[in-house]
Length: 189
Image 1 (tube, rainbow, N blue to C red):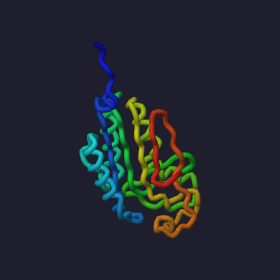
Image 2 (cartoon, rainbow, N blue to C red):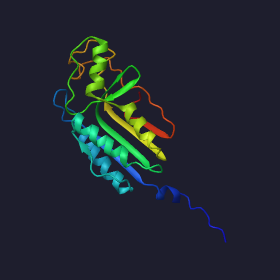
Image 3 (tube, helix red, strand yellow):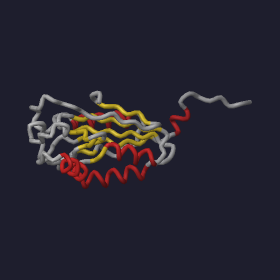
Image 4 (cartoon, rainbow, N blue to C red):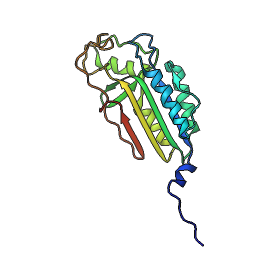
């Protein structure tokens, strides 16, 4: 007698890990109304379908989030299904997407080199997160960015008008690609 494969059986044996982040109560840039609620609701739904998630990470500052990301990355095993979700402000610089945490401040320079360095030091590079998750060799990665994208460094007039929602030249995030990953944006990049 031979055993028959049951559709979906392998999927059930894989651990499902999720890191869900919602940043809305920004200290120095415009606040977002729904980021925390979106993160809470998604966390609840993910738990219902078997994802392991401690709690949604709400309104974390940059230093806190760096530690949370390292802990999450270190928890990933080679056969896991991994879901990463970020709701909050995001921006694109050159070919990289950056996620802004609670303590992010507006860039106060028109010098593009200085602005790029500021972003590298004061925001989290989404591509770096995806690469770190991928390096753990999970079975699959689901990478969801629900970013308010009205802060664009493509316009070198980096005053606060973009963060106050009055900039009509919205650019958005850039596309991301990684083998074994599903990457989705709330708005098309």
